[in-house]
Length: 87
Image 1 (cartoon, rainbow, N blue to C red):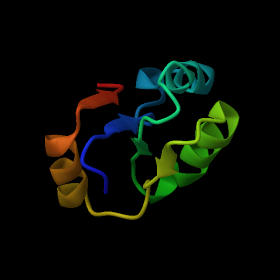
Image 2: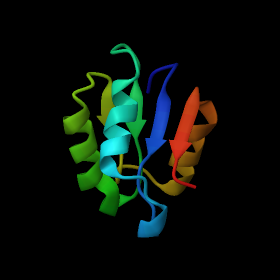
Image 3: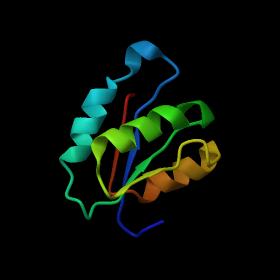
């Protein structure tokens, strides 16, 4: 984990709260290429996060969805420069 990073949580258990995938891709594309971006979520979110990462083409995106417990993600959020989530 880098010292400076941004966390993005693009999924939600409530479909009605999810921002469309294309919007996440566009958001990521606005960050400079040297920006580290972590896509986080549960195991069921991994495929959509991989899809977002691939479609964005951003070199700094890393998919962490499904790899950590909720408490670990909370710790990651606490040190992030920015957190963008649906809720």
